[in-house]
Length: 178
Image (tube, rainbow, N blue to C red; front, side, top):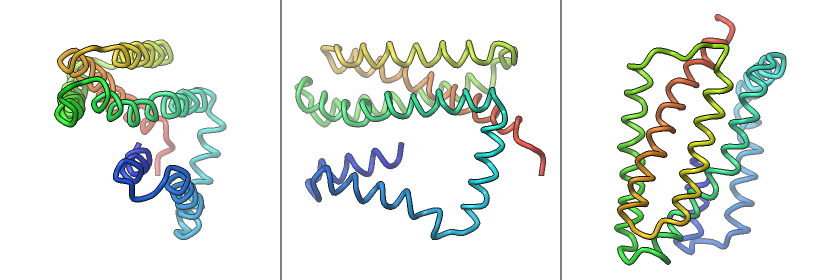
């Protein structure tokens, strides 16, 4: 998520072209662990643990798909929509991101208040939430007003906040004790 924000900023500010921004980001992601040796060992242990747990492996494939199919279109699409579709321009961009943030706070609160779903239904819950986010992203793409887009941003943020708290906690609970 942070990488896509950095790339979008470099391109939008015209600090560099798209190919250069992506190349620098890819190189940084590749060499980063090698610059910090402990990270390589930790990454290797974590990768082995996740790969040997079928449920976690499936979860991480879903997370990778979400990252690829959602974060890119969201981080590039929102500024594009704000610039080309909404007369409010930068205000629309800020409103959508602000309502996402407010929704995210609500989603985190909901994750802390509601009881945890049954562990046997974890996959169903995750896929349902991911489906809601996909539908929301599609609706965002066809929204005709800043108000509607901001409402969708709030809903997407709520689901994202819930997923971030609940599923990160769930993954941590499956990790081996130190």
